Amino acid sequence: MIELDLTVVQGGNKGDTLSFRLDDGDSLSIGSAPGNDLVLADPLVAKYHAAVVINENERPCLIDFGSQSGTWLMGFRIEGKQEPITSGDEIRVGSTILRVEYDIRGASEALDASSISNPLLHKFKGLPLPVKALLIAALLLLVFVPSRSHTTRVSQSKGESALAQMKVFGFYPGKGGDLSHPQEVRFPLQPSDALVEFDFMSDIGVTLFVDELPLTRLSLAPDNWERWAAIVPDHIRGKRRELIFRAHNAVGVNVQPKRWGVRNVRVSQLSPASLKVFEKRSSDKLLREAAQDAEVVRSNSRLPFTLLRTLQRLVATMAVRLGRPGRAFEISLASAEELSGAQLRDLLLRNANGSVEEEIMIDVIEAIRALDAEMWRAYQNRKAAALLAAKAKNYHEALTHIAVWKRVLPDENDFRSRQLEAEVKKALPKRVLKNPEKYLATSR
Image (tube, rainbow, N blue to C red; front, side, top):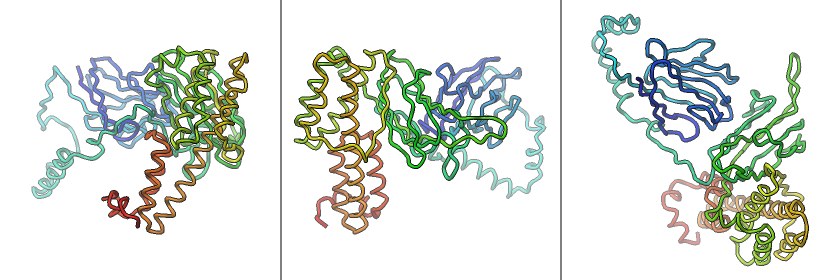
């Protein structure tokens, strides 16, 4: 039996170690599909990408299942055959790097050095004693000095899935682009009601699916990155799903695929703590409660975001009742107008009396688009003001902008909050970052 540990050196949940026990003839499958022994939330990993198998000599070997992005062992791509793995080797599947360490139980591992036919060992024997000592010292440093990637454990937020941020996926030539997915890109979704946000650009038609169920046809965006949001309910509680971007692209000999791409994909859980209570209420009652909140939405800076999350959860609940896989829509900063509390209330109640639920959902989505566009405009204005203050060395004002934004948008997992703080802190000197309270307490 082999006790095998896989440590994530690069990728989601970096620093985590997963342990497996394998007997002779066993295999450990790696891929993005739920049926694998090791499921990786990496869009560059195929459904069934690779496997660690135990050969007839009771040694682990790596095999690739013909994946497009390939499987790499210690920097070399493996193709068509099993490659033996030495404990401590690193393998790469997609953009994820795993360190393999194993221990063979029930077999003697003590081997006489004279019986090992290794040319590197013979070269080592022929080296002068001082050189041997230096090599041994370097090896001990590598073994016993903890590396940052090995010891750092990046905690996975409960509110947000670990998905790619600014990286582009699809068929997008140019700096930071991707040419390996001319037809489709898949992202795993955790089992929960989810808000999926992403940027999209394309010269061709692209359809968004959830587990092969069409959600929407994304509109062409050949010139600019457009912001989109999708609300995807968890119809079957606890079931892992896939978000699929599928391009209507021609692929063949002497055919150049057209450009398309998605970037900055992020997923936030929408399931509230009181989920059962939320689901038991009728859509009409939930809508009228939201309309009451909308009427006073301008009385507190936090209320627009709170109302936004309430409406997003309402759409997820209504989609379940209608048997829909979800709803997706564009967030346009140019066309969306800021609505007053009374206008939001009237919009939500426009079709409340006796209308079909589909018409009500359309009104709720219109309110979501207006509120989300408002949040994005506020974010852009706040970030510009904070960066301008940092450049002018008005550190009190720069830090105040961050603090105010956290009150406006209290969800620490929201992309905008993290991005604002990260960008402003890059513009601040180290002395300010070491003691921000000192500068917040002063006016200059």
